[in-house]
Image (tube, rainbow, N blue to C red; front, top):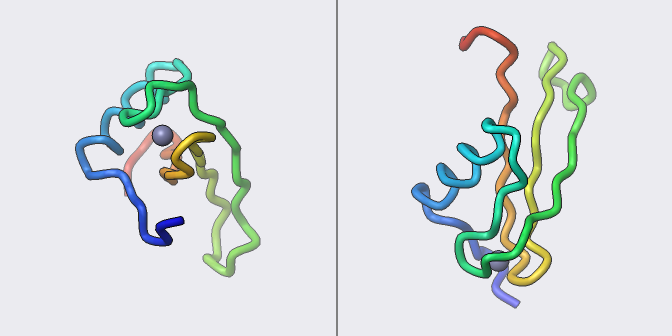
Length: 74
Ligand SMILES: [Zn+2]
């Protein structure tokens, strides 16, 4: 089990694009639908509520975490 297994930036981008389009992203490496979880903000000591999308591949266990921007970028 590789602890530091991560997607490349390109792969993360592909996942994000699918998510933004309202689709369930497939793992770029395994080609299987990824598990999605929504992580609510406000409890991480950041001072403001933040919503994050967490996508996890059930096969290779890689995951990608994105901030969900609401309307405007900061
Ligand atoms: Zn995978």
